[in-house]
Amino acid sequence: MTLRAVKPQHETRTRILDVAEELFMQHGFEGTSMRLLTAKAGVNLAAVNYHFGSKDALVEAVFRRRLDPMNAARIAELDKLEAEQRSPSPEAIIRAFITPGLKLMEDGKTGGRNFTRLLGRTYSEPNKLVRQLIGQMYAPAMQRYKAALERALPQMPREELVWRMHFMFGTLAYTLAATDTVQLIAGCKPEDRYDAALLEERLTAFLAAGLNAPQKSSIKKAA
Amino acid sequence: MTLRAVKPQHETRTRILDVAEELFMQHGFEGTSMRLLTAKAGVNLAAVNYHFGSKDALVEAVFRRRLDPMNAARIAELDKLEAEQRSPSPEAIIRAFITPGLKLMEDGKTGGRNFTRLLGRTYSEPNKLVRQLIGQMYAPAMQRYKAALERALPQMPREELVWRMHFMFGTLAYTLAATDTVQLIAGCKPEDRYDAALLEERLTAFLAAGLNAPQKSSIKKAA
DNA sequence: CTAGCATTCAAACGTTCGTTTGATCCCTTC
DNA sequence: GAAGGGATCAAACGAACGTTTGAATGCTAG
Image (cartoon, helix red, strand yellow):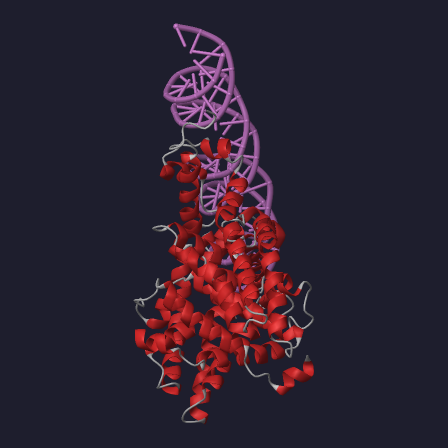
C-alpha cells in the first residue's frame, strides 16, 4: 500500500501548526521565532522549513487550515437558507454569517480559541502577505452575503449597507479576538464568556438592531 | 533665558514620533527596525535611544502623545454632557465617546490617520507591555462611561450592558483601524471614507440601535 | 573668547534571526 | 539482507537586530 503510517503521518506538521497558532496569537508573527516555536512543539529547528518551506508559508498554512472550512461553511449556510425560503430575513442572514465564526471558538480544547484570537488580531495586520491572503479567502463569502443583504434590504442605500456591513464585521472580529476589553469594562471576567450559544444570541440581537437602525435624514440626503 | 531654541527644540523627537507612528502602523512594532525608522526620519541611529531610552519606551511615547488627550477629551465630553442635562440619552453618551476617537482621524495631514490605524491594530496586540499600557490609559474613561450608561439604561441587566459596550467598542475600534475590509465589501473604495462627520452619524445610528436592541427572552432568562 | 552642555555622529558591540547543510536515523520495498 | 527515501538531527551560515560607545559638533552662558 502507498499509505501505511496512518497514525503518525504528518504529526509533526500538525504539532507545528498548533503551536504556531498559539505563539502567533501570543507574540505576533514577527515576534515568534522559529527556535521558540520548534522547541515548544518538540521538533527540530529545521522541521518548519522542511515541511512548509519557509516561515511565511507556515503563516499561510495556519490560516488556510481554519479559514477555508469556515468560509465554506458560511457559504453553505447561506445556500441552505436561500433554499429553504425565498427571502430570508436580515437577522437570519446575520446568524448564518456569524455562526461559523463562533463555531471556531469551540473547536478542540484551546486550538480554535487560539485561532479566533489570532484571527481578530489579523484583521488589522499590516503584513502585506497576510493581508492579501485574508482578502482572497474572504472575498467570495463577502460578496455572497452582500448580495443577500441587498435583496433583504432593498430600500437601503448601497453606501449605507456597505458601512453597516463593515460595522457588523468589525463587531464580530472584535468579539472573536476577545481581548481583555470585556474585563476592562466589566471590572471582572464575565462568566458566560465562552458560551457560544448565548453569545450568538447577544450578537445577533445587537447586529440585527444596528443593521435595521433608522437612518438620519442628514445621512439620507448626503448619500 | 533658559528656553531659547524654541523652533527646533525637540524637533528630532517629534520627527521620530511621526515616523514611528507611520512605520508601526505599516509593519507593526517588531517588524519596524530602528535602522529603517531613523533613516526615514533623517536622524542618527542612536537618536531613539538618546531621546527615549529604548525602543519600548518609544512605543509608549507614541501612544501617550495621542491617547492621553483623547481619553481626557472623552471624560471632558461626558462631564459637559452631564452638566447640561440630568440624564443624558444613550445616544448622546455614545456620541460623546466616539467623537474624540473620530477626531483623531482628522489630525494633521496623515499623522492622526496613521495613529488611528495603529490604535485599531493595537486593541488586539499581544505584546504585554503594550497591553498593560493601553489598559491603564483606557480604564478611567471606560469606568465613567459604564456608569453613565448604567444610569441611562437602568432596566438593562449589567451583564448584557457589558457585552453591548464590548460590541460598541469593537465596532469603533474596527472602524478606526479601517483596514481594507470596507473595500472588500464594497468592491471599491467608498468616497466618504474620511468624512468624519458623516461617519459619526452612521456610527451613532448603528450603535444606538444596537445598544437599545430588544432582548430575547432566552437571554433574559439566562442573564 | 572660552568653558560647558545638550545633541549628533560613525562605528562597533554581542545577540538573535530565518535558513541551509550534510550526516544520520528509521521504515518500506524488493 | 540490501537498497531507497522520507524524516529528523546538530551545527553552522550570513544578515539584521537593539543597544552602547566615545569622539565630534554647535549653541549658550559667563
